[in-house]
Image (cartoon, rainbow, N blue to C red; front, side, top):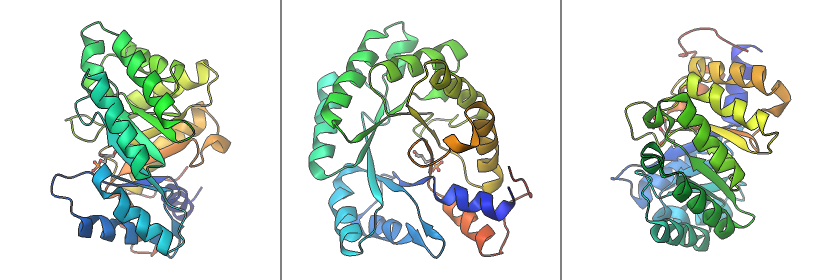
Length: 254
Ligand SMILES: O=C[C@H](O)COP(=O)(O)O
């Protein structure tokens, strides 16, 4: 696939993200305006839940089918299940189409796998037919066996997607974690999707994730109902490539 086609594929997989403490309704409105480009629109925006109404109003008024994702139990993946579920309920009430919940990864590292299973199960019950993505924070889990375990627990308890990272820790999406997570999805013969998030800023990086995913799952598997990039600045590079401003560092394609 040439670089432009790869950029177009990438565009159709981006959860365009703004999760900053200084976000305002104006910042989020601006993000929503960027969701539609001359080359098509991204599948979703990912924002804090207090901004869901702003985004919803904008997409409804502009008749745009861009999903609204938000985050809960974010970013630390605490073990307070009541809080995690209350936040998830609030998100759904506010109109979220997709909830990205942080798995209690620190509890798992300390040997407690039960709380993760419980939170994911209850969160999926709360989401109903809305999409639940479970952020396992693979860069903190570090060990392959823990990344595997968090992925398995999430999938077995109802995750619609497993997601690498919050974007708020030193190590975010990596190809190593991606390989482990995709192999779990495959092994379990699961319908679960995958989201690589945090630190992916260029088409030349995105292409490596697409190549790996095509190798493990197949090229046909890669569509927005199964694969997403969570990214705050990847769209800029995608548009540079599509507009012939070709800023992506190399000519990788897959
Ligand atoms: O879920 C998405 C991440 O928070 C975005 O991270 P990024 O700002 O490094 O692209």
